[in-house]
Length: 151
View 1 (cartoon, rainbow, N blue to C red):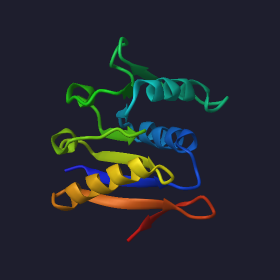
View 2 (cartoon, rainbow, N blue to C red):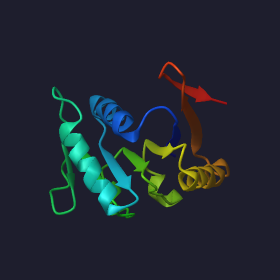
View 3 (cartoon, rainbow, N blue to C red):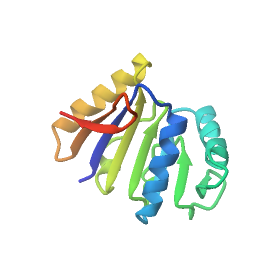
View 4 (cartoon, rainbow, N blue to C red):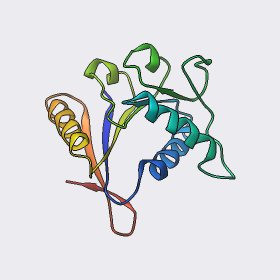
């Protein structure tokens, strides 16, 4: 069963949080799929991973490219996009079914606290997970910028 982490963005933006989480993912030797809710959001994420830092690069690919990249970007909700992956990041309104995350190490839902629709999706997913063997945890950023596990 996958561990499921909910990152509630209140102070930071996705553009600053996601690259750091992906760097940690690759440091552990894990492979990740980043699923965005909309194609235009995916395009922005792809650009971000090329430009977020002058001294760093996150090897990634998306539709039309080889799936061999350690980070795969998609809007699709298919098991094929998760084959050989350890993590699934859900961003920008993306969702996942329970059978998609069963064989993963982690599923990480990053949602914008200022977006009511994103909050509702996160709450709905949390409620579904509470009735399963998955282990959901909720993370919130402190005023100092450190992520802290809540509850």
